[in-house]
Amino acid sequence: MNMIYFATSNPNKVKEVQEILEEVEHFPFDHNEIRSDDAEEIAREAVEAAYSKLKKPVFVEDSGLFIEGLKGFPGTYSGWVQKKIGSKGILKLMNGIKNRNAEFRCSIAYIDENGIKIITERCKGEISLEERGKSGFGYDPIFIPEGNERTFAESIELKTKLSHRYKAIIELKKYLKNKA
Amino acid sequence: MNMIYFATSNPNKVKEVQEILEEVEHFPFDHNEIRSDDAEEIAREAVEAAYSKLKKPVFVEDSGLFIEGLKGFPGTYSGWVQKKIGSKGILKLMNGIKNRNAEFRCSIAYIDENGIKIITERCKGEISLEERGKSGFGYDPIFIPEGNERTFAESIELKTKLSHRYKAIIELKKYLKNKA
Image (cartoon, rainbow over all chains, first blue to last red; front, side, top):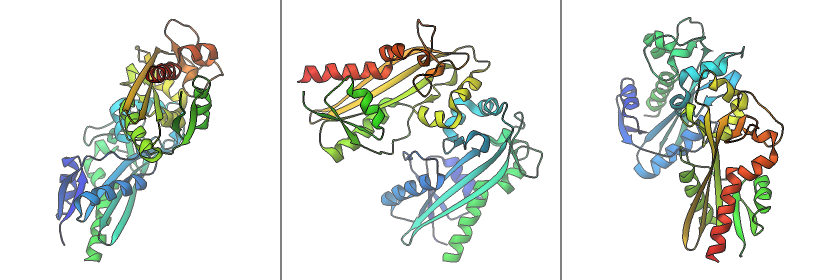
């Protein structure tokens, strides 16, 4: 498989991906994402911008936590919301809301000379009643994947197997293999 | 004074502004704003985009509610956050937070053949303990301007006099008059 590039400003994400997809190199890319509730739309616009600069096969990813009882909040703004109000803020907002269903969503947009491929993977679950666990980051301490009792932050193995981002990268790997 | 254009997707905002500045026409403009915590930066980028299409004197405005105890949340994302969690969500987030200081901020970016002028006006106040009043929109029912006891939604006169947007338009009017 030929080298492909991961356009992101976050080198930690590149390391995570390289454990699954060895053929990935970092394209440092500080792009002002568009405002949208749709992770696919954000990824599509960003990868087109990256490709117009790099002119080599490249992908971007956009992830978020979508909570049903909060109309999809924090969604595509999950990173920014985490910095401002944290997981504790989300728990406050969930006070008095019975529907605690939520999903992590990861959209990858890959582009090469043949065009764009969009991959979206989900991990369904619910918001816990309190923060639990120390591993991971972001909303991991308040997210319990479907069929489990522990949060992502209580079990890094759980997160690795079920994670939206992991599943999306696996799908990208399959896609590239079939293309080759 | 010559005609100037207000670039916005919201015709109601145009009507509001025309009560103060008669020489304003609507430039329907559905622009994907950049992501930033800084209203001035958002307005500056947007007005440059508007000017490159219109090529006539034009301004944009970007407003938000910045709450000290929430690290500036919801800030430049105020409109989106209002749609998702509403003023009730903000009150939940304020539970247990002693510092209820907040400010409405409005940045206007005006551009003509001589360049860009940025105007930012503020209205300081605090977040009320519960929603009060029916007039206005958005966060008006939970915002009490400094030195007052009523919320913006309890007194439309209060809002008109003290509003960040009103003050910014008045400043723009002065600036245009001095230029003429």
